[in-house]
Amino acid sequence: MKVKIDRKAGLGIILGCVLAILTAVIWVAGASTNCVRWPITFGPYNTPYTEVNIDGEIYPLEINLGTKFALALNRKILTQISKKPSSMITSRDFAGQQNEFQSYYVSKVKIGDLTYKNVLVREISEADQFPDDSGVIGRPLLEAENLMLDFPNSTILVTKDNAHLQARGYFLEDMVNVPFTTGRLGIILQVETDWGTTKLLLTTGASHSHLKAFFTGNSKQELQSARFVIGGKDFGSMIFATRNFSNELLEIDGILGMDFLKAHTVYIDNDNKVAYFGGF
Image (cartoon, rainbow, N blue to C red; front, side, top):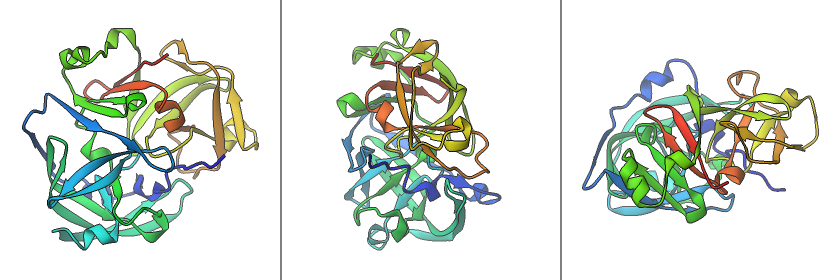
């Protein structure tokens, strides 16, 4: 099985004082922001992409809820757009390796009918292995929104209005809900597996769900849990890849990736820190 565990993991974990750099003021506007639809396509690793307008040019960017950077772009794109240099940013990937990246500010980024201003952008290194015309939309652009992830229908709806959801056939009362916490890594859910209560990072940047090898005490490359319970609802058996994570990642036991998210609808209520799951 070919697995992508967030090849841009260096996008995800920011240490020390660089967090202050990332608190850029992002201003959002739109012609009709009560409900905005982002059409989704899927890349070679099954991760979601949408089109983004920068300086009048359209670029397909991956949507990655597991990265702390607002935006990351390949050098080819950065040479074509207007930007202001910022500072070097230090981050660590899931294996604990430290990396340094150049950052910039971009005055305006448009995704559908939403416009984001004063956006911090990180340059993607060659090791991240992205196409020349691509990049990543990260959590700082998304955490102020409530998102309906309907990957079975290749759609993300950006809305905080339940009436808009119901008009499009999404009924939160028919979905199971579970509270989540947020921190330096992103959205963390507690689910029940064969190994007990399991803390999983919800990310659209990983093709497959993973568990820490030492959490299960098993060195097999794949493990199956007979149960996968979210908010009291058992979604059935679940296959996890195992991986060695950095010892610094104490907040999580693993990752909930696109193998699960692409098969279900998920509404992320960032305002109330509650996730709703449907499609069962």
